[in-house]
Image (cartoon, rainbow, N blue to C red):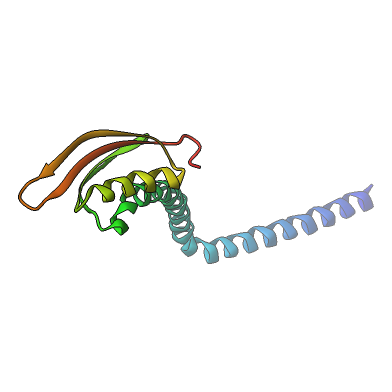
Length: 145
């Protein structure tokens, strides 16, 4: 019986010393890592900001495409006076030197295949410089094609 008691006592001391060594090692590792905890929090904040930035970038690409479509007529020797974008379409007011420029603008919007409907809101012949001032509304196609 004394032998069993001695064996159990030695086993308990062995386990106890291993546990103390593990606790000591764990505390040392914790002390080494604790200065880095602030970096972990910063890394999480940066990761969240990157996620938000990606969402914003995607929405900007959609807006950019809409702006490019609405403003594409500037290549046609047309002066844009105002543009209003909505999620479904746009309203644009512009001046062109001839009626042909108006026809080219309509043709441009229809050729892009991104505009589903066009409506003429107003058309004015300016007598002072013989130019045409036009306002149109356009509706974007739902599928973006």
